[in-house]
Image (cartoon, rainbow, N blue to C red; front, side, top):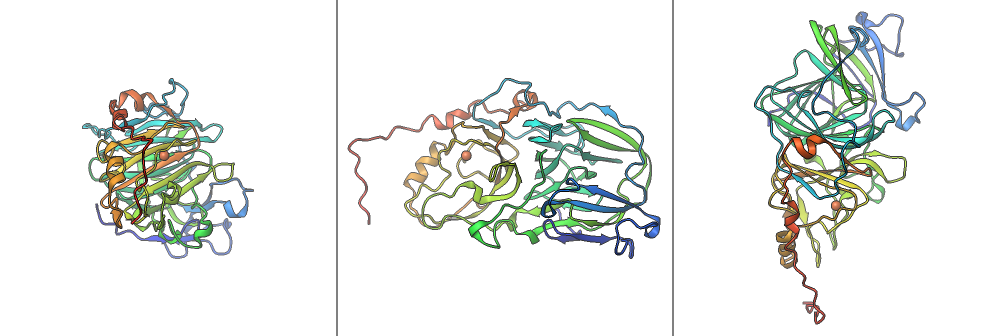
Length: 440
Ligand SMILES: [Fe+2]
């Protein structure tokens, strides 16, 4: 894990202002007749102009050239990026993937994108997608932006040095970052790198409401970090601007770096968050809280409390519940649950679910602890114990049905066809003569 020596602004959804040169931000207005230093003013709108004030997101960028100075877009091919999730026959099975391979040949972040599953479509701005990225070289003289939605990026191996129009982010495993719709960014890596991406088409991620928890807890706003302004005035012969647009990639050439924003202000920004700062709240008397108590970020849908997608983590914590089966309960869910593991072992399945791998429990598909976990937790002495130390697993949970891609189901060749066996040894212990154990 490399050290992060960058400077950041702290807060979630805040109105930020930052300048890399003194006086580069216009005072008292957004679009003066002439901007300081001869910069161009450009607004990046992340919500409709007329979105309610509390959800309105936009930023003003003051840059050496406006983003529009580029040649026409032309389509470029990508073998494993997918946005049509109805191509294949549905598969309701419990699925588990062994760790996805990082190629030996040189591949950068864009070429290393592989779509596993998804729902909906970007044209109607409804749906989400789960991608894996695997790469080993930095993007050079190229930048990506997503016209279709937001990327929530979860590095699992290797630190990402991300240059954005807003400045630089250093994102290591156990941190996440969100690059929102339209923001141009370039990913640098220091070696073989792998991670997970949750893409949402509908809306932007927000912090979940806390209700009776109160004003503090779970992911606290001050722990979200946004870059300070950083720019380069660099002419490049053929800098590639790559747009993911309606599920396909397009490329436009321009003669300069797009990272030429000298100052910016606004509340539509990229940000990162360290999962170690998550303030865990859990059951302290009995029973097992629903995993929603571990929600870091949510992309809300139109029905109250029903998310397009939630990002949920299972962090190190204490388990103290009395007379309780403490691991995750057996479950059938009207939502789809995609899980990944950043490091360590997942508590409900010590074997088979590995860092860099994944699992998918689709709508109404049963899942839960494996045999060893059930037997162990049913007989364990219920003293206070640490849970999940040295691990970090997470879940992308969506109210949408997820369709698998060909890469996810076949090409990656990582599906563990024996997964179902982990539950086959759950024995019948039903006994008509059963008597409760006398309470001590
Ligand atoms: Fe579940």
